[in-house]
Amino acid sequence: MNLSALESLDRRWIFLGMALLVAGPLLFPVGLPLEVSKPTQEYYDAIAAVPDGSPVLVACDYDPGNRPEMVPMTKTTLRQLFDKHCKPIVLCLWNGGPGLVDQTLEEVADEYRARGVDLVSGRDYENLGFKSGNEAVMVLMGQGITNAFPRDQRDRETRTLPVMKGIRDYSSFPLLVSVSGGYPGTKEWVQQVNSRFHLPMVSAATAVSAPDYYPYLQSGQLRGMLGGMAGAAEYEKLMHEKGPATRGMDAQSLAHFFVAACILLGNAVQWSRGKRGRA
Amino acid sequence: MKREIPLFLTAVIGAVMILGFFVPHPWVSVPTDFLQQSAVIVVAFGYVLGGANVLRVNLEGIAKRDRDWPYRVVLIAGMLVTMAVGFFVDGPRFQAPGTPSIWIYNNLFATMNATLYALLAFFIASAAFRAFRIRTLEAGLLAAAALIVMLGRVPLGDFLLRPLTDHAGLPEWLRTTPLGAIQDWVMNVPQNAAKRAILIGAAMGVMATGLRVILGIERTYLGGGD
Image 1 (cartoon, rainbow over the protein chains, first blue to last red):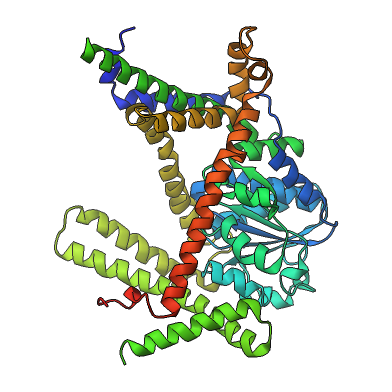
Image 2: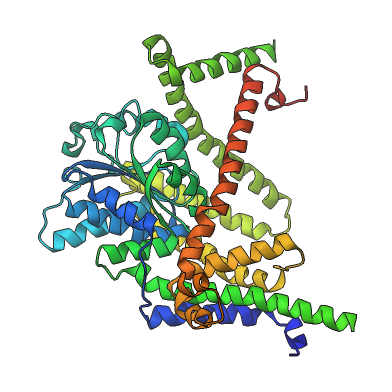
């Protein structure tokens, strides 16, 4: 087969191919069958095992760049927690994230309010907001959550909020959920909080950073993990939802195939050129 | 003394922080807690310093009419407008829904940030075609692992590859094992082993460097050569 025509392929054709393959399934979803992986099942089970009504620390460390992966994970996690009448205590250590995290939390709370569930910020859930300092904040929270976050996202004094009554430090939580887009994120929560304060934790991570956390998953430091959009879609399946991650998986499937085809085709072109050179 | 005092402070603070990890006694925990709170304040001050530095570097570039200086004007204008809206229009509740700051965040920052990341998909595909060359055994192994993980992570992988592997001539395990399971094995065994080795190596390196700094052997952080 003569592949010489592809040697000078304008990269805009590749861009067009990728755009069509991503846009097509987003506009016309196919709904490919999904298998739930073990780390996703463990993530779901770890949250399911939390006693009903407990406060759960949810660290949303991401910004709008990670939105397609992180927001569906956050929303489904919050839904599972609200279904169990748990009280999510949300915080963000990324300076670009607080606005997005707050909107995500309020959107999920609004869903419940629309169904007649009486959810009140500061009573049934709380957004502590952003604090700069990365690992130093994580350690500081070990001395007292309200000590590290004296005022919340809405500029309210956290000490006076009903939801914070009885919450002192990490020992007040049965579980930490780290929704992590990179640094600081799951790795730092494991190193600074899980290993030091022995707080059980699960992680919802981007597909790029998930491989970094497999050692923690295998060692039991992470009780479960969602890896990228695939993990988010599997989690939605467990929660009987057809959310944005499930819809996005069709597009991601085709995009992965396209990249794989680009690798193979690029090398085929190279080999054919080498063969002609030797001939 | 210009070098001895910072070296002394580093040694004392480093030693106290290490002790604080193991000793819960107030004599150790109180100064450790104070130092941790100070660290958060110092990091927060870094934002002020960073902002001042952005202003200085870009104003200099604009004054000298450097290449791309109009972009520097956009950067400075964006920064000053965002700060002014936060300080003078919204005040302490600048993060509440419906404020001009949140409008800027949603309609400018969030969209541009997401667009920048979304562009990566196009460049990864282009780079895969042009740059990912299998010339050595190592590159071949890397490509094989990449293809297995990429296709095994998505539901379409098994759906499309199943007819290709469903031949009587192929080994039983290949016909019956889903691609997703092979992908799981790659992630759990070889990937995990390599990652763990890197993590342990890096952690030991950090410990060695930390000790060198505390003991005053490593002094490059002071600047100005040894």
